[in-house]
Figure: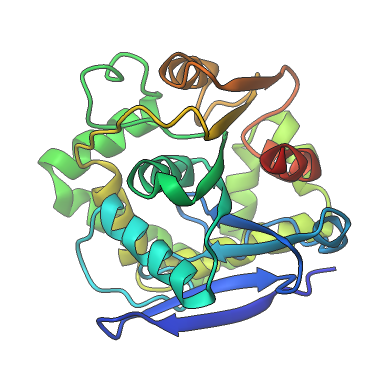
Length: 289
């Protein structure tokens, strides 16, 4: 359990890009884009699932998350370039892509920009564009607030995330428990597993350890306008959605289903936002098909 290796590379501009990996010698290459306010550490800790499916998994930290260099404002296209540079560094030519929550939007941008390297795009409880006329009416309320704050009153957004950072630093257990208390029952059941709670907690620590600035700049990137082209029909798109998810709701996955017309949809009535953990092996398997 949890035999992931913490690694990093220096990018061409000398920034540090950190990531967790497992199964270097396994044949199937999978990239994981983590969620908002989390990190590459918040992945399922059971590495036997990866060996069972012959998977070499790489989970990449965005700027300020984990040990990746915090360097101010960036775009989702910049992150796509960083991940591509990592793949080139590792000599990886083809990869399956899994994007969870906000990471789902980053993964869509990567698949759009580097489609020739993508075998499948797997969107799990995925974000949709925040700054788009198409999505304005279906954005969940929390994300509408984040979008508004970052576009019009960014200093309040920065202050909000800095406050969360202090709360985690000063009273970790109580802050994590407060977050768990706000979860839907389906997600609380998942976090009841001690090993799962540990990786989620570590993900939060690694997200907010830079006074909340990593999350702030992540939010700014998410709120920028993007243009996504129609993916090649050679790229398989799999969408996963929990019926109880109140972070990225079923209406957002419906939008994705309509956008990616050749996609498959796995709709799980009794799952919440954390279904990527309860359904991890099934998601992995489908990403390889």
